[in-house]
Every structure is written in C-alpha cells, then in structure tokens.
Length: 68
Image (cartoon, rainbow, N blue to C red; front, side, top):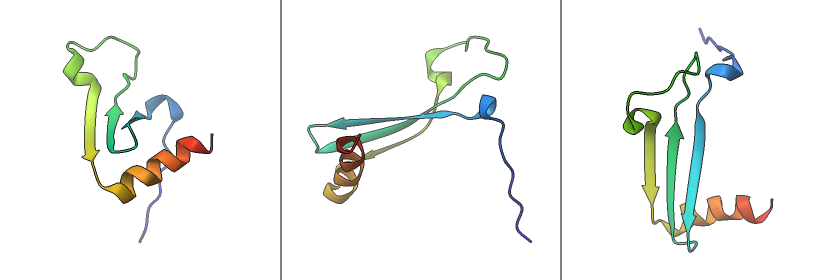
C-alpha cells in the first residue's frame, strides 16, 4: 500500500543551489520554523546538503538556471 501525504506549504523547507563557475554545485536545505520563531543558532537552519564537482550534475543544475 502506498500512502501520499500533501504537506502544507507553510511547513515546507526551501532548497538553495549554489553553482560556482559551472564547475561546482552546493545544494542546501534551509529549514523553516512552524511558528516563525527564530532558531537558537545559525547551524539549526541548515538541513541536508550535497556537494558535487561532477560535470554532468553541475551541468544539469546550470542548464536549469540558464533557461530562466
């Protein structure tokens, strides 16, 4: 059995992509608070993160931004 849950947009985290010279890519999850309170420390804001210097991965992300 498969269950799909739709999340309220107020509880969704944001994703930030940083592409440097079309050679490196850093993707970071930025957490949001449910009640808009501040976090105790800046490190609490960050969630999962990935780093890539793979040409195919960086090119894929860069092409998305090139089309905007």
